[in-house]
Image (cartoon, rainbow, N blue to C red; front, side, top):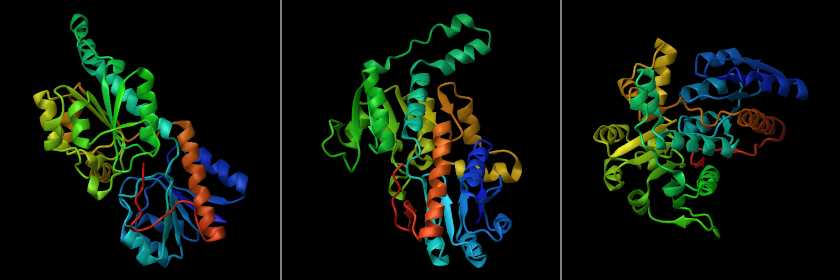
Length: 334
């Protein structure tokens, strides 16, 4: 059986090839993102697996349908860049991978937190400027002496809670759907914002969560708060974040999922650069850590993303159903 992979990263290629050899299928592997033009490369395939943060449009799904390709299995969680209504209208069925390694993302969030808590960006800046003495004057804070607010107690949030508690931190939690029979200290979002030294976001990028952290939210936070977002870029109003970084209200920010990432990546693909002055300004701030949506990126996670995605694709083709099929009104939990 012939299948195709788009948006294939160098690290994914060996896992895809190994899967194809093991299962006796033919896999066409493309590094290009999937769109209404590149889909032509998939002529004759039964299904497509893909990983990208740029849009999957209604026009793409219609092209797939016209080519007789009825199945798309994405190798990640997020659905915010997929026109699911367009897919349904074209008769294309879609699946995702709701959990490939919660530990990978939670550990990365804690890594960003520790970097910011010990002011390593400022220390590194002084050392690069050959100012050894200046680098010695940034007093850090201990995670175990901090109150950490975890927003979202799904798979990743629960793993983050476990790790932060391991440091001895007091952990406050907010989730509109609390975990039953847990020992988590659930509070309102406003109470979490007001009492947390560190705020760690782990909620999906649903429309209702857009700018859940905004100017009003920052006004409720402690002076010198640290905020970390490894979840979805739309959760934080970046303009409000910048205002509060400039004023010093926010002592540090760790951003793995950037609000304007989708457009920036389109610019990168078309023009060879992000062309984003907001990103450029934040890159110059030593108390900000920006990373290119890599919190998930471990060997364990990549293998799972490939294997679970292909399991979904074969389920569609062979059994008429995939374990992780998503539809227009589905709500993904990261």
